[in-house]
Structures are given as C-alpha cells and as structure tokens.
Amino acid sequence: MKYPLRFLFLISVLGLAEASAQVKIKSISLSDTIIYATVDRPGDLYVITKGGQIQRFAPDATLGVVYKHGPVPTQFDPRDGSRLFAYFRNDRHYAFYNPSFDMTASYHLDSSFVIEPWLVTISGDHDIWVVDAADGSLKKVTQATETVDIDVKIPAGLYKDIKAFTSLREYQGFVFLLQPHKGIQVFSRMGKWLRTIESPTLNSFNFIGEELYYIEKDRLKFFNLFTAETREQPLLQPAHFVLVTDERIYSVKNKTIDFFTPKP
Image (spheres, rainbow, N blue to C red):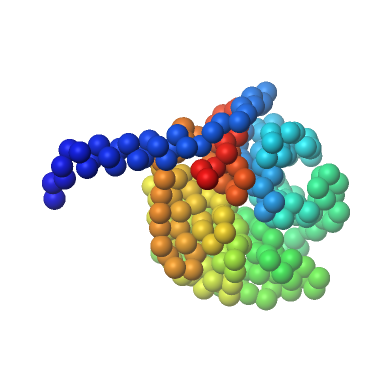
C-alpha cells in the first residue's frame, strides 16, 4: 500500500513531537558503570553498579541511600520500597532489607527441597519462586515451613540451557522468566506456561499498571498483561535501561542517569 508523502511526513512529525514532549530535569553521572536499574512502586529509582553498590534516587534526583553489601546480588527487587528483596546465588541465600538497607531477615535455601537455585524472587504473598537448574523446574516455596507448594517443569521447548534465563519476577499474579535476546516466558500463578513475549534485542523489562514494558531497538514497547494489547513509543534517547513511573521517566546508560518528566 502506498501512502502520500504528506501523510508519511505527518507520521514522522508526530513521532518527533511525542519524544520531544518529555522534558529533561536532571542528569547525573556516577563513578562506576550501571549494570542494572529498576524502580519501586512509589517511583524511586534503584541502580546497581559493577562494583556491587546499590544506589537509590528520589524522583527529584536526590540520592537517598548508598549501600555496599559485597557481591552483586543475583536478583534484586525493591517491590513497594518498604521491604527490599535480594538473592545471592553463590551462597544460596536471600535477604530482606528495610528502606535504609538494614537487613531485617535472611534465609538459606536448603538442598533438600531446592537442589540448584538458579534464580529466586519474592512472591506477592511473601513466599518465593525458584528456578531449580538441577531439573529445569519452577518451584514455589513457603518460607515459614520450607515446603514446596508448586513444582512444575519448565517446558523443554522454551530453552536450550536453563541457565540462559537471567531474571525471575512475579507481578499481578503472573510469573516472568527473562531470556535475553529471545524474550520473556509468562506463567500463571500456578506455574502453568501461558505465552512467550518475543524480542530479539530484549535485555530487561519492568512494569507499570497492567503493562509490562521493555526496550526493543529504538522503541519502548508495552504489553498489556490482561488483554495482550500492545503499544509502543520512540525512545527519548539511546539507553540500556528505561524506567517509567507516573511521575518520571528514567533513562540509564553506562554511568549516566537522565531524569525526564512524562508527557502530560
């Protein structure tokens, strides 16, 4: 189908207008490379540096807390900002922290019920989900009793190497497994595989409202978890991580964080 040149020009102008509607309010440079970035539900930004430091920034770009535990956590999820979760694969333990990064609880994963805990994340009911690399399973474990409530095999056709999965998260009653440069595997709250969100360039993802979003090339793509509807918008600028909240858009690349106001 052919379109008039005027129509194509209008589409181009609208795309540029959409990107330019965002206003940069602050730019911050760190002394170390950022290897991970995420946000909590209230909208604070958390970045993890190559040296293992975790830094939290408020929407106004104020540095809140700087924390250095030692090793870089395998998984980190700030959840609602009041109970931060971190998993450390090397010694098979996960811990919870308060907003000041004081440890409030720590648990070791016993090999009697999880043989090789590759990925671990907190569930909405405060239990944990585990990817067990020993048998390619997805398990839900009750913290209080250390019992396995759900134990399902991840369909073998979804992966060649279980250790290719790099992130495990739960949100809105769904469980998500990230396979970089391939996509996101979506499971139900009972561990049943539902669908694959495919993307050849995907390296991370996050959530806002009922949507999951991720970077694909020069676009930010959104996927509605309940309707499967999709939408997209151009990136404001090249970035390794883009985090969207009601109040801010954070654009993160290498050692730099840019703070933008979202479009009205």
